[in-house]
Length: 144
Image (cartoon, rainbow, N blue to C red; front, top):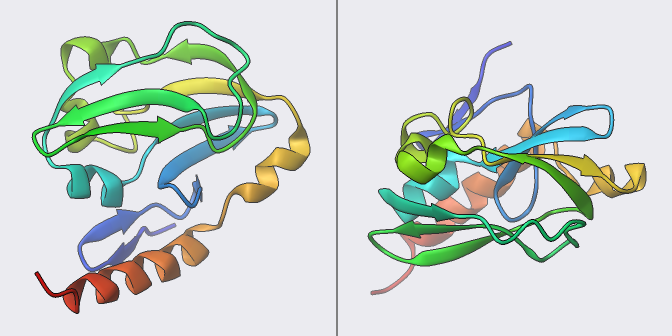
């Protein structure tokens, strides 16, 4: 299964994607979550990763993690209601892993979905690729 490449952004076909650029690898109701290649490239070099306290459950739309880059500090919002099972502790010491391997070693957290129906918010790789294509075309026409 080959990845999709849209304007230099890699989109693995074996993952699911949220509208806020979080990818998910689902195994039943347990998901590994991370940020997409598109988002990490938009943020630039990640210099710090901060996880909120172990407040579980995490409600959809609440911060899952804070990423600090040379450009901005951004809250990565949980795409679903979930229970936090594990965070990627390696990111505390080497946050740049998110830039280097966003779909592998740069994963953010492992969560358990509180409601299987919540998983319907995720898009296929093809649907996400169409959204990225629209965004990248929009950026080309923005006036500075």
